[in-house]
Image (tube, rainbow, N blue to C red; front, side, top):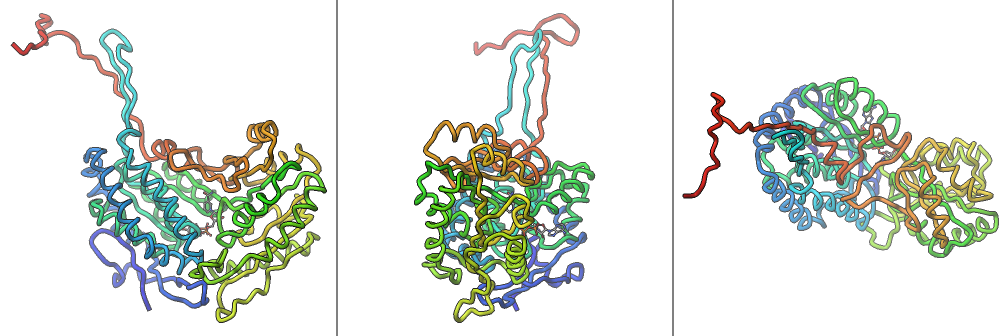
Length: 501
Ligand code: NAD
């Protein structure tokens, strides 16, 4: 069986005695194990850190424009390899090829941002802060950064992190999800091909043991994490305790508010993609819809049912499929358990996606789309993230309730409002307690030169991903106060401005 190895400087490790544990990598379409991934430990990390330490000073001393050229070549190589990367990604994750390409493309946009790093790294300057005194600040790399990433965006999220970190002059150690680890390795290979020196981007696979080793390693200056909230909180606490800079993005339960004046056909089209696309395995999915007023709710429900019935669930290579299988059997069970919890709590299950079987792929991890109505804020199935193809209708009597629901939820990643009323939208955007807001935009993921980050239990730490926030995260500021007295060492004041004569 294929073994997916770490990618650390100095070559292969699969035969190393130090890292013999392995994990299963499934093909979610067939439900079968398709590969094994090495699970590394502290000894393997030590090797990666030593290589990073050796490579980083030279990389930091490489002028930013040359570093940007490496990012530019990497972007071109990823584009040339787009089809192969998308198929590889889809074969381990289960998202359809169009979604896999979107995953890669959104990551590439951060690489495009990183191509402008010379501009982003320019510091500040004050001339004449005092008599003969000037002050300037520089953004310096931290040294070695690490990224710990989730299964659901195996291309985009690693690129969010290493794209900015490496362009800023850091060495980077990536610990991708052990559930779909192949694309991150391929990206690291392409970075090498693009000209990144050995040791500047390394991939170590693993589970909690590797994460703990990263968090405890004194030579790693900053850790960026994306995953579920309990683990994000744990990573944040342990990393900060060890004196590191940590940003840790967590789970989500994003609401879509539907005002009575909204274009319902457009809302239904948006929800089909935003709630069910990628089998709901997106941190910016829209799994809760909040129609304002019963009339809006009834009309929306009536239009949603046929739209959901029309969704095609298929293998990830099916170009007609709206979405494919979820990532593994445990996750499929978890989603189906949440559907049962919703039923037990008294929500009305309007469309039941459980028990869905795809002919010829009966062992695959497929779940049909589900729709709940009359979900209430007291229900556990509302409070927690389901992360599957399940849409919940929570009816709100008025605008105030619609603002309150996402604001009071434990998560605060994204939210959307659908309306034709500019004043209502403006009011909502200003007051809602959520980090990323869409106005008639169902998935308001900020473009790469803005920054991504939620509020409350959706993000621990206070600096967001990519854009200028990313540059701030991956650099530290040095401020120089300088004075060049006009005089010779003996005080005779003989300095003469040189002339060309
Ligand atoms: P996860 O928390 O299970 O895993 C994330 C990472 O943590 C992986 O690399 C994994 O190996 C590691 N990990 C797993 N268990 C660990 C443990 N006990 N201790 C230390 N590390 C551990 O998340 P996932 O299932 O891979 O991804 C889905 C989750 O990620 C969802 O909750 C989703 O909302 C969230 N997510 C959030 C964002 C965001 O930006 N806010 C983006 C994408 C995904």
